[in-house]
Amino acid sequence: MGKSFIKNHPTLLIFLALLALFTLGVTIMSEAYGTAFISTSFVKTLGKTLCLCLVAIAMDVVWGYAGILSLGHFAFFGLGGYMVGMWLMYERTQEVVLRSLENQVIPPTETEISDAIATQIFGVVGSADFPLIWSFAHSLTLQLILVVAVPGLLALVFGWLAFRSRVTGVYLSILTQAMTLALALYLFQNDSGLRGNNGLSGLQNLPHVTAPQSEISMWFLWASAAALGLGYLFFTMMLTGKFGMVVKGIRDNEQRVRFLGYEVEHYKLFLFTVTAIVAAVAGALYYPQAGIINPAEIMPIASIYLAVWVAIGGRGRLYGAVIGAAFVSLLSTWFTGGQAPDIPLGFYTISWVDWWQVLLGISFVLVTLYAPKGIGGLFDLLKRKEVQK
Image (cartoon, rainbow, N blue to C red):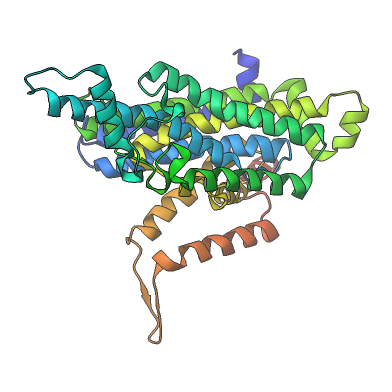
């Protein structure tokens, strides 16, 4: 990465510097390594917010830069969480089972241990056998490969079928939403192999780790910050030069780019698949901090929220996606966590827990109508004023 690249992309250096300062500040004020000014629960909230910023960047690349309004990228986010969650739940349950059997006179066989683990995990859905999709749950390495492989393969197959048929616009959005809904409805079934509506729980407990939650939360925050920084750098470099110009051309006038001889479908398929993989990595870091994942996380409404974050932050600019996701996520935590005071009107009391989604919807409409560049557009105004001076 040469000096000319940094000079042409000053926002990259600014973003990475701010991210490093933010991470350092949280570390200094954390319970585990600092002054304990920030609680462990809020450290987890900040770590999860960084993961949401990463998936928002992926959404911005595919929508803001390529013009593909995908309403299914949160499904890839959830699949990444499920893949790593399977290993976490298997290993944690194995620890519990081995501890309960260690005092037996006759040591248990491998089959007995496996059956006990399966009963512990799937007894809640009336099963005592491991489904086929849990074949690699014992291996962290293989499950991490699946974090990339499963969402990436799904995006590749879906994108190939959709883009080769030249489905665009609102029809493509409906198709991605249908894919997400079908996946969620399948996962709600008890025989899906992922515990149906119960989902995977206890993911915050790292197997074979005796460190307190305060330290574990900081480890995940560091990992989330590193992933966000690398993701920002990766997409900035990818969208630079000829490739980025072709992608923006597809967004602005797909037919003209196709007439110029470019394989539009190949570009769109590549971006759709890569952003799905990045979304899955973000999910794999998010859900161990959340502690639980269930099919409701993959419902289409989550992907719609993702689009709202990007629109409010300002699509077509990576830092805008980060601003939108961080702003809406933290504000949502404040409103829905009971910290925002209710407003008594005499005849009715406004409770923000109930009205937050309405406020978010109104904000999206207002931004779309009157500030299409979102919060990130404010930086454009500042630049213009600087130029005028």
